[in-house]
Amino acid sequence: MLGEAPKVPAEVAQMPAKVVALSDIEGNVTFLDAALAKLEISDANGAWKFGSNQLVIVGDSVDRGRDVFAVLWRLYNLSQQAHAAGGAVHVLLGNHEQYMLMGRVKSVNLEHAHGALRLGGLKSAFGADTILGEWLRQLPVLVKIGPVLFTHGGISPEVAAKNLTIAQINGAMSGYWRGTTAASPQLEAAIGLGGLTQYRGYVRGKEFNLRVPTDQDVSDVLKAYGASTMVVGHTVVPKVAGQYNGRVFAIDVNDDTSATEVLVFEDGVARVVDFGVIRHVDPQQVTTLRPIMLTDSADWRALWALVTRTHELTKVPHPY
View 1: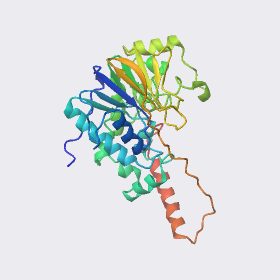
View 2 (view 1 turned 90 degrees about the vertical axis):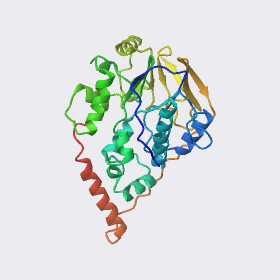
View 3 (view 1 turned 135 degrees about the vertical axis):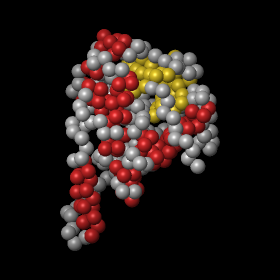
């Protein structure tokens, strides 16, 4: 029995005794299960054992890996159990959740894509009329726990200068899924190229030809939201580390060459923990190219699927 749908935690919450932050799971359920067990967030059966503490998944739980459905069901079930225990699981949308709900297939694992196709395609498999699709469309892009902001890419100085509230940004995101797609500053912050799920300025910004924020920029961003710290994922780093004098933590270590570290807040104090769980990221799938064979029915089916998906993408509201 699935029971009642998980209650999405408050987007602004008090800091509990302990918060664990993970990001960029990307369909890797083997890593997720091992990490939750090692961190004593779940028990041997995968059930919540973290009490009134909180887990934050800082975006990009989907794409690339083959076990997207399994990852989302784990987080869905844990969210139910955490709420019942007085704790919380904050699952944030990253750019890949946004892509998936729009039907973009560029970074989708081929086996997962095949499974989704059997359910009518990605847009149907995660449609608003499905359990997971309805839940995903309620999730935020930004939460604040105590004085700490969590968001997938980061709040740029330009976004912070617009004086948008957390509720306005998250409201624009959920409104978008309900059909409110007219351009606005808050929607641009939620889903635009310089918005919270896409921004890379704080981490390797120069590599992406972005202006790297100054210390004063960081101070202004944090002041705008009454925060002392911001936690971001999105861009792979060699180790979990505090930048800007510990005010911005980059936690995307979704690479087997990166450290096996996780960010933990204990009584509000940030601590980097090496918990020894290797990601075992699947190698990039090698694609072999050959000319299309018009006499092969499988090639015709693949061609028709490509045309259909391209047509679906033309329905995505622009500029988003």
